[in-house]
Image (tube, rainbow over all chains, first blue to last red; front, side, top):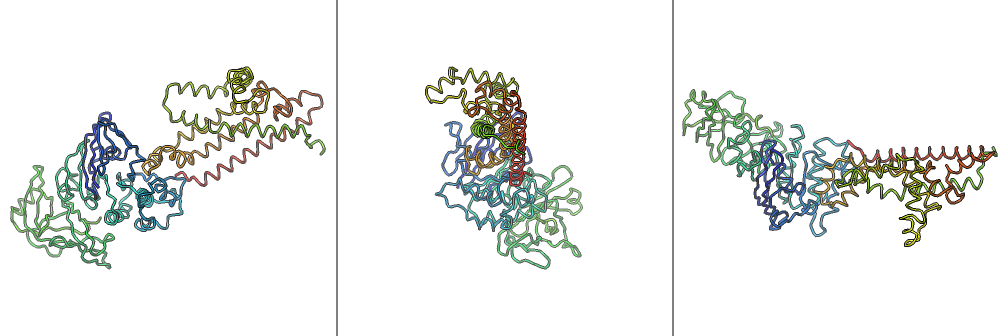
Length: 353
Length: 233
């Protein structure tokens, strides 16, 4: 699947002038609220028509102001998961799920109903009405409804933003399975670093209606321009062992190992870990008698003072780089310099996903 | 209890009234839906004029509405002559004319009810249906229509009740011919005009009360059924 989108639109004070390309997988549109992410996704879905723009999917032009092409939303076959689930109140969950299939072209091979129901864990809800579901359940049904319409592209507009942390933690594992077990490419809009870090293959950072940066999660989310509070390293690893009594999972990175809370992990599964830089401590000697489970030995690869009393330390641990945000005072006291061997200390609790 | 027994003529008036009201309600429904949809959603020149014309029967004296119908739909009227010549439909002094008069009088009530329910539909749901592949017509049939059903039912009952009670426009347009255009209301009026007609007027009055009550209960029951089905959060 290839997707090329470009749009320019003036909405009062706000000017959207952005575009990106995708070759499949999960593309995240990331940025603070008001950065134009939703506007751009609405253009892709055909819910709004920009002044100038172009949208090409797999070589088929769906929208082009130059040649006057505008394929209406119901003919684009893009699934859309809205922030508020928008389930039909007059239909049961089963009927909501089946809704899109009535309109899907008969030639497409629709996703297997039972498999999607199982994947999203909504089997027990089928005969209920949307009004009787919790926020997390509604959102899972909405995701299933979009998937079952046999979309060639799934657009998810902050699907978790309206949910509390518990509900988010409930849905995120389903989204990971979705990414790994279905072939439908996804455009995922979010302002949450941890969601993007876990799910995205490619990140498009938006700011004030423009694209600010594009790259892989580990490249882009460690850039200082990302939301400063949540900036940090994104590392990829494999779940090696699961400690069921302690509800922990050990993840093997390129060399080091890291212990994270067991959030529905499965052995052998490839996962991403987002380590917020403000949650990483730096020690010059291996600490003892410390509750933190992760003490990685490494070497300082870079020190970036931000001129505001803080510094970002890049610590090379085997093949991975962990970022730490510490005060400039600590840099002085510990006499941190390039190439100096140090230990990165990370509380497992800080990695709760 | 003999005085409670309805005469054949009275039965005829009751049957005619039910027929006229039902036909008025059913025939005006598609038009009511269309006009309500235009008024709720449309953006076009002359929208306020359309709104005014639809509401006119509510404000005008019924006799005036009846007279206007006579002018327009009478045998020599602009529309009446056309219908007579090309389609062979005669409305004046026929029960069909009574249904037209009743339909016109009930139309604003039906449109208001449906329009309000269309305006309260969450358009985000229609947007969602669109992204799932439903074209505008299917969105209307599968999402909008079920959601406005309570308003549509209420509008139909209102139009039916109005038709049952309609008197002025009907009698002006199609007169008061027993067996053809003499509806329940017209029959009661006729009874009150003749000496000794009180008992007949009372019998028909009781029937009118019973029918109105039944219509009201039916609408409550339907609204309950729909409400149970449409669990709006």
